[in-house]
Image (cartoon, rainbow, N blue to C red; front, side, top):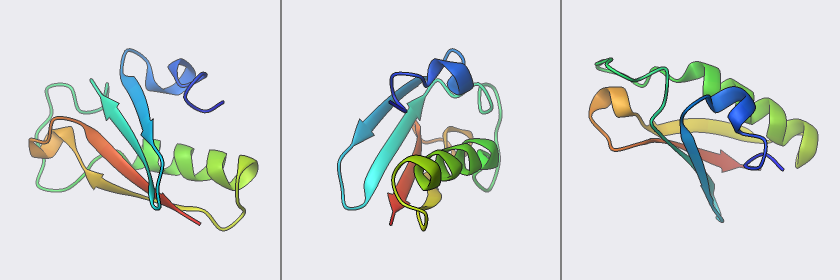
Length: 83
């Protein structure tokens, strides 16, 4: 359900998922990172959005952490989901 409706929050980015543990969400073409450079991950909005969705839909104790960011030079923004 999250991937199917990802257009509502990822804009022109492309969200893919990988089963875990930990589960991973990968966002290529992240609108927040397009043209940005940083020395730390900058996708707090997506991490918080994914965490809230997983807590509501999957597990109340789900935690999401961004482990890779396009603004740091990575090919995609990657988020790990643990519960």
